[in-house]
Image: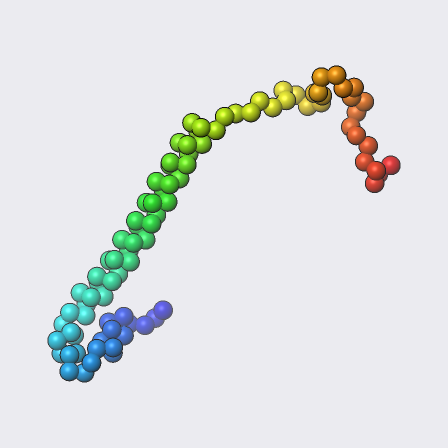
Length: 90
C-alpha cells in the first residue's frame, strides 16, 4: 500500500531493457488495475447468481412442515397439567 506500482515494476526490469519498457509502464499498470477490477466484479456477479439459484431452489424444493397452531397444544392422548417442572427451581 502506498507503493508506486510503475516504479516497482520498472525496478524489476534489467537495466538494459528499461528504456524499452518505460514507455509502456502506464499501460501495464492500467491493465493490472483493470484486470483486478474485472476479477472482483466477476466474483461479485458469481455470488449474486449463486444466491439467486439458492433462493429458487429453496423456494421450490423445500417443503413446509406444519407446526402447532397455537401454544399449549399437546399430543393426542396425553394429559397436560401445565409446564414441566424444572428440578433446579423446585
